[in-house]
Length: 268
Length: 327
Image (cartoon, rainbow over all chains, first blue to last red):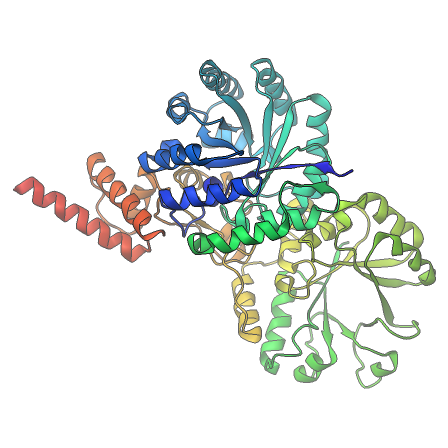
């Protein structure tokens, strides 16, 4: 019996951030419907803070969805979370900086500030009865002790899924295994893995992540995304279908790719 | 010491590179940190002689064929009896085929090709078993890439088990991509950090010229657009500190970051682009007008804007605003 793994498709969020494309509302609705039809577990539909067109896309995707959970991406900022809540998604995903380079160098803040802000954001969403998943941004370059302490605090606040993001794509198979195993040993929360392809290892590290504790795997159609892209959905299923069970077949993914090539070709 | 053998020049027989192109290709491979270059007999004949710098391997189909081609460091062959300066090669398509390695017991070197789906199985156990089967042997691992995992397998092998790898530029031989392996080893193992990777754009252009095949825009390490940034949050981060959102410095691979104006741009990206293009930066209201028009234009045309398109848009918006002010 193969282990069941769920796909989180982020074509409409991380994928669309790839320079070269700008999807219209109709495009996003069409792509979401196709992904829903083949059994994608969660569709990351966009970022409400981007503006009215993005919000309209999310409303329309919510209206048209059949089975997939629809999530939106939000920065760890209370105003962003409030704006995301207006869309009434199934899930708000809050991207949380966890590496020291992001916390101290980019944001000029500290770990205490991160903890205070993420808990405040989570509480805001929870008070509105919306599920929250928390993304550990740049987890691959972070202090594991900090990740574990954050995980513990988030669990207390009712968060049940954390996303381990290899934001700059520097993980190797050994580091992926070590990271996932350590977090798995310290929490019973659901783990999601989000790998970038900067060193050409997005598919393999996603497989290693799935083998060592990730239940949810982030992918995009054609592997589009920032820089060298994300984990390619077709390649991931093709490479690991011998050990994992997925809701969709390779043939179905190819069918979706054909239907949306025109809209996404600028990012391929 | 990790050794990388690049076998791109065994994959170019169907093209017609010039002698000069092939010599330049070898020179550039050595510059980026390749330790040995493997070539086909056809490639060698086109080159006419071996470059002075570097170690070269010849891939031949029969050990008797080596006689007309002296001067190579070693010869690689999948056929015939293996002795002397030959490195035998074996294809393993399945982890259960590892038992076949017993036939090569006592061999000084061997190259293992295949095992493309190894990442799905107990890859550590298998790699350990391979090294145990051939004690004292220099095992050159050449994982194939049918499952997009060759790079990861090559890195895992080099960092934990063996010392030698076979790769090809852009992964053109359906194995790990040389440039990705070199960069990953540089970041993860500080392997040859002093090698010069700034020639990668020249090497890519030469590869494209020889093969007539275009390297994808998003190809890791060498793609034309891997350092293009549009999203507001990332553009801002990269300007403050490139390490925030880039695995390695674009300059070290002969490239530079470029802010692209598109649907996901924010006010900071607009200001940065205006400054980069030496255009006057309007007040906040002016910036918001430009941003609004950018988003509208991009959504309508389903694409990001080129620098020229952005320039024209800024002129249109600012002249409209001036017109409204003076009306």
